[in-house]
Image (cartoon, rainbow, N blue to C red; front, top):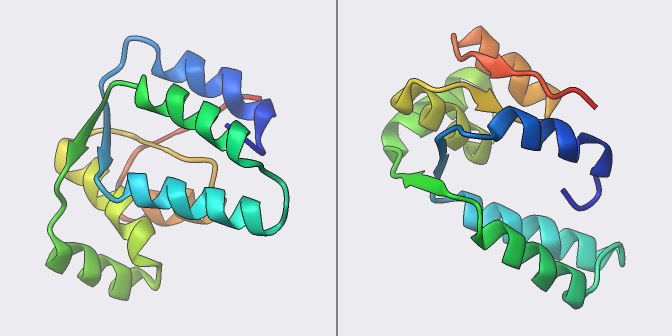
Length: 120
């Protein structure tokens, strides 16, 4: 929740006692997000390591999503592959999508994925 503390409690509330699924790419996306924060000097390594400790304690079931299906979704919806992985994971597991990204929410709804709304 680094950089978006206002949403933290809403996310925690929505996910208590839930099964959480994510594509394996989430690990790399977290690394990318942290590296961007390093570059803009909004995050130091100590805080990043603390956040990774918290992240490692979240019981996430990682899902392999088929690259061919996600690339077709990426092309047809004109979205980045990383967003297509998340949508495909929700579709594949018949679960709702939890994101703070409004563009991703919109595309997910367009392709029939239920989106959980975070209250801040």
